[in-house]
Image (cartoon, rainbow, N blue to C red):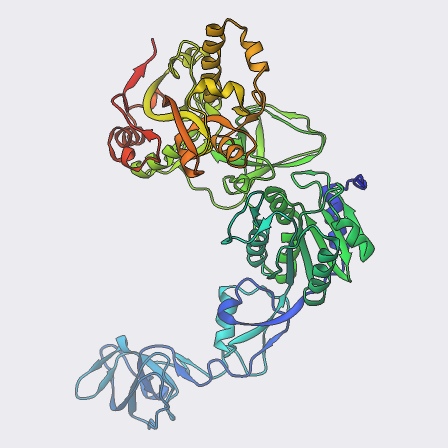
Length: 633
């Protein structure tokens, strides 16, 4: 039975619920080398004096101060040297009047001496000549001057930094008690497999357990990873019970929605309290806040981007507050590169930042790279329906931003990685598709666009500059990608016309592969004397669209389709048969004003060299036109 979400709580309401939860940290002992950033759970009382003995604070000579009172630069006082005192020993020397002993910084003061004359105010001959007087205790640090035994040196709750760690070491504390939080982590789902194991059909690797565990550590918590549990009520309940017995709080991922197979909220409700089910936020709406078996529990969504968003926004601040770990969020202002439509609820939109422009990173909640490719996020309020391109937005950064040498916007390709490595440049890549790359060039944002658009006349890329209104840019010919049919190894398909009678999976409308596929199908429709629409309507799967070459290969490998059009690279990576149809031209569009820049020249040299061809994945190759600059009249 499916159940609707309870009334969605706002972001502020969710944070208020968390603040009111009675979450009590544990106290753990850690060595001081691992204590930085944590909050002390107890006062630290010194058991020793610091320093533990009276010592010289300068290199020089231990003396009776009274012996130096008459010393002048032109009328020095002469003293007899009776020894030398290095640091680290307890000297058995006694200094009498008229005597002196050489002493190192930090060394124990000898008995009888009450001052140290700096070495630069003395000269050595048959005796020690002192040319400047000193007062009693000058250049001497007495026992307990810094810290006295029994003194409280650090207060409970103090967050330990470099200075505090130094104090702990000074008073001899090798270990201290800090506030700790043991966090149980449970991923749910029949499809989950631990990384390192074989990935059977229908299975995916468990991402959330390990990404969330890393987040807990960064916040100062102690993660406990439990094995992923199946979508089984009994297994989930037992996992929650075990975590509640051993942990301070529990984080689950998956099974949080209101679908018939999502039972986490029911288990929490039956064994505790659901404080909130559903937060008015994107991504991460199906989140749960509650108490189960007496312990706070946070149900994170199963999709990685949603899971990490809810963790970062709600759980991470809680863990840091308890353990004392600080995070200073850096904010900056940028202009939005494209128009963004909101969906009527609060949204934390990941963005990549380049030269003051914010590019939305939208791969969907299921993509782990959504956050890894982003530099920060913009918060869109529930009342905002649309943000126009060019509008100023506030960006909360995830950390420091590396300034790139070049900005690439467009259709990404595995060959681009090899080219970037050869050029040895820091190139920021924004995967926005061929059309998105051309828009970025037209707007003056991108330095390079990667495109592979086929015109109806069979010409790649060049005609599209005029269509997009781009006049101040050139096309640099790149490399060839083998396009063809992807089929299973045992397939009887031999040529393109054979796909009319089998199950196919098509590429998305507007992609270069889709354009090429339709051009070939139009040729067939003309040869057979039937309308294009009639031909495609008769094809099983023609209107089933895949956004990537890999999605085509996956559908065929899993038996969901018999054939599709894609590049050789993904066919070979998936162990499938490839039947070549044509070479696709993957080119680069570059503004004319940048052609002579150092970075673009390095990029072009790398492209024109034969190194990329050797490093390119199967099915990609450079050719005689690689690096040719085509200027548009």
